[in-house]
Length: 412
Image 1 (cartoon, rainbow, N blue to C red):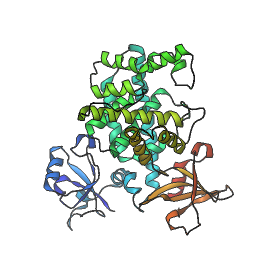
Image 2: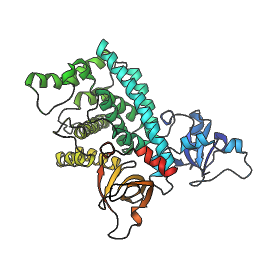
Image 3: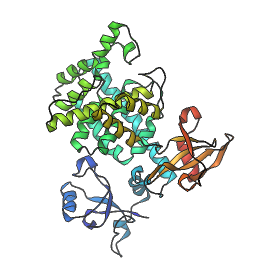
């Protein structure tokens, strides 16, 4: 086993850290997997109150020979939890179908819990006109730590939603994607927290409107349109009444539906607030496109990203946010269902380093549409010229494919 859980006192320079016994939000490190390169990093971990860590002995040093198993070897449950980050697995050939399946199942479970909690927050606001802001902050804190470890699974679960998401499902999706992109942009933990809460609550003002106009439509009567357009301002009023005065959070909620213009003030704080507002606005538009709220029909992920790219191609500061959205989602994300030009259908099980367009697949249907039992592993990077290649991404619900079940069949 390449993963060991050890006391912090046994950690030393040259070991590769992949897990700690506290939320990464409560440590001094934004990166959650890295080589220990200096004694100062060890001291920072100690000051953070960490007592146990998990290391990857294939990526760094192991314990000295003779260490006792009780101190050094992770249990099966601990190891599976630590190995849950697809970030590592998507970058190497050491992928595990059962691990991917477990991550997907856990992400489904957590998302259902988060939706229930956010629904409680929104319903409370609908009733009282006040926001349980501390509860929202706690939820985002938990979400960020989980998203760091299971980014691909969290994104995959979004694709399993119904096409007409509820208000809180939409807020949860915008929050999740904003955090994923913010991490790629190297936002600090504090910046991720503020942006995440604002993204979660960006449509809060809609809870005070009649339920029949909660969703944006291509055309509305003028009175309904004016009422709908008032929801950012109504959200601000409720947040301020609830004692929320964070300028960046309020700016994101206020501007998520407005035309985004580069601010004249280039001070660092204003620039960062603008960047976060622009990012949440882009993600908000993306989710509306793929769910049909801003178009006549729901779009595929690729179609939505193409439209956003065309929409902002002449605005470099916004196009940059779109580009990061494209990079964060990837060409063919882990867990996505793809159809080959041959007619075969498979699930993406690993990303080939440097060749994102040639992933490892688990084929679950052959050219005739007959299920493959068990699924067949195919590495597209090893296919000869003119061999198998991906034609497009498919909706697993429309295809009647249970991704988690396919992965468990591979592991059986």
